[in-house]
Length: 281
Image (tube, rainbow, N blue to C red):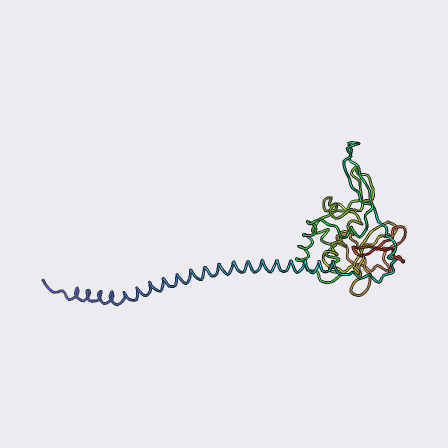
């Protein structure tokens, strides 16, 4: 057999290449395995971190909620200051009646009973759904000043709760003055001036506005009987906020068309009540 030098060199070359590459190929395969192992560990750690971050955020949210509820509860239990206003706190302010409709078995008809409720109760009695929505929106919008909080309390009634203005009517559609409690407002979604004012002031109570800074006033706007919100701003001046209007903003009480005078004069909130000695201040 004739010796083929070309074939011999090819065989030697293949042996050299194969023998020299194999350790590197083995090492590459080993490193690829280690890399994939580390990549899997990283992926698992990333998922674990994501889960722990979600838990941390949940705990922080709960902590914020509990802190807010603690602050608001602490405020509601604190001794309220009596405001330095020209008000006779020994007198009872003007208060309308509250309507309760029921079915009378004796007459087989719906009937309505009109009763008086202590006025401060209107600002301290609410349903859970209303309360939870107020807290949710308060945490979102975070109003800071007294003015901002009073405006916030009025605005969410119109913009978030979408309540509409309607004169008081009984179940048969006949006009009859009816001061609603907040659960009644929440169910009906229709309110007039005193209802808007009650809900605004009650919301201020929930979000921690001091009782000596915000109140409901009854009296007149021009020549018409009316109820409206008043508050004392950081400048010490009393302002009026028209709670029935979605676009209203505070104006100075003194010199405005709003007046507290007989026979509808009154000032009240959840902590105190009285009758103003003057029409404006």
